Image (tube, rainbow, N blue to C red; front, side, top):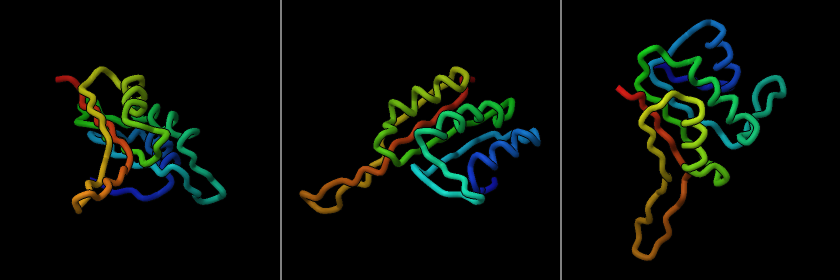
Length: 121
C-alpha cells in the first residue's frame, strides 16, 4: 500500500510511462488546485483524462477502483457514467457522501459523491 500526495496527473503519467500497475486505485481529486510550475487542476477539465488513465494503471487482476468527488457539479450518477465508459464491465456502486445531523432538527452536510468499480469474477 502506498499513500501518494502529489500532483495527480504528473504521478499518473509517470506511473504509466514506467509500466507500473496497481491492484486497487483510490482517487479523491480536488475541485480546483494549483501544483508546481504553475500547473492548475480543474475538475471539469481534468477528470476525464484522469479516469481515462485508470485502465493503464490497473493490474491484470484488479480488485477495485474508488473515486470520490466533492463538487456538486459531479453527482454520483455522473461519476458512475464516467467509470462505466472507461473501465471494463464490472459491478459499479455509487452514492452521495453525507455527514448526518447530530441534533434533532439539525441539517445534514453533503460532502460529495463516490463511485466504486469492481471487476466481474
